[in-house]
Image (cartoon, rainbow, N blue to C red; front, side, top):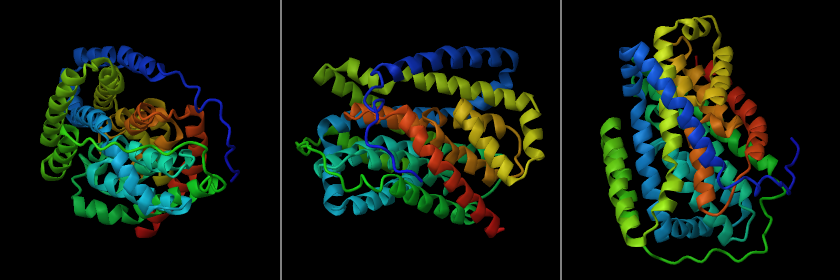
Length: 391
């Protein structure tokens, strides 16, 4: 694989309003589509919406909590700790990979990118390192590491809903594929950025100003809720916590515009509308299920990856898994790993971009796909190979 060049004019050239425009575009398409589907098939639309709303409510709460915790200095403190543990470029990469994989498995990938992206940025800056290898590893690892538990990614829950597979049986089936995908991501990113892991930047490290407060307590509360409560209840509790702390933050700091911009509610509503619309379509149209029924595991994974890039993996999962799927694990390999090809592929990718920018580092859409073109084929092949061996 070719080493990535150091200069990328797009890396800092994305317009600050690009994601805002994307949000309004998603809203303009997703909400009318959901309204039309509801008018045509209100039962199917209700079933699709009930399947899809928890992650969007959960993510809204996590983003609100993250905004407040960031302003209080929590992420800078965690970044300082990570920088101390991973003192060399290679060790920082491995520590980042392990941390992201662990948080993704236990708390889901959206939590992982929302809370850990600013932590990793702070760690790289504290060591005067080029942050790019570590920040791109976060999102690639979050998508790849979300395959292990049903709750690690909503796509897992959507696809498994009709299979009546227990959590233990699912873990036993995909454990090898998950391990293969996690290891593959680390190896590929390390090779791509081999000449940049040790590079030092001529900037001062970020200074940590301790300021723990309601945001820190909210993070703890959100983690407890996601571990202890069922998915729907946890989503509502986390959203409630986020609204309370963000509301207090806005009142005390009078910074409502910044909170609204980083939340990007139009994007969340638009994606939810698209997921509802395609979930309704999948219940009324047998085409997707017919296609998957006549596809092998590798073809199923490719269909999942392509659909995730084209319409985002949550709407794609709603469409493709509206009826029982023959190769459910292979479909999840495509839906979970395929989004590393494009930022539009998963909500986690969009959140990662948004969180990176709010922390003062703007990723590149083009660079993301460039990295993905190397990461996705290797991780998908490794995961599908592991699935074949486990049978």
